[in-house]
Length: 198
Ligand SMILES: [Zn+2]
Image (cartoon, rainbow, N blue to C red; front, side, top):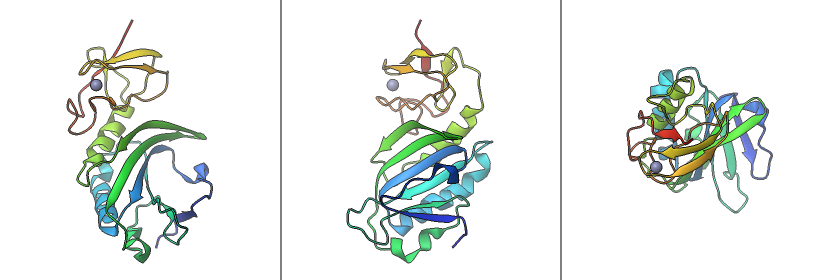
């Protein structure tokens, strides 16, 4: 196992300083080793597409009884710790993927994907997020998932009409109603769909 592997027992504090600035992706649920391995392989395959934003993966198990596998596991180098025998017997259920953005001591929730299917293409979402993050231009006055909000105010999802209040410096999320901005949402991940209301 890698030296960068950190295991936290349930109830331990999440040490923010130990995480790289950038995108933090947390898979929660009872994940078996096959599913974990798939996700890590997927990441390694696409690592070079993430532009200049770091990405850290976490896998959080939610077993209620206190056991050795009841852990949060972090590996900044993405060494395949999923071979760890403790994870072998777990169910293949991912209950949510939580996307956060960390800058120094600040950690910000971007959005949560609930009950994604095992084949859900989270990597495309992450790649687009990282690409969009450094891009500060609007596209026909519309903004993409992952871009930084430059002006606070109400924004309209031009695909479904949902209106969301956004604050300066937060990140444009996936539309929680029609899932625009996510793979298999109302529009392509690459499309700009948030429009500022006057
Ligand atoms: Zn929408």
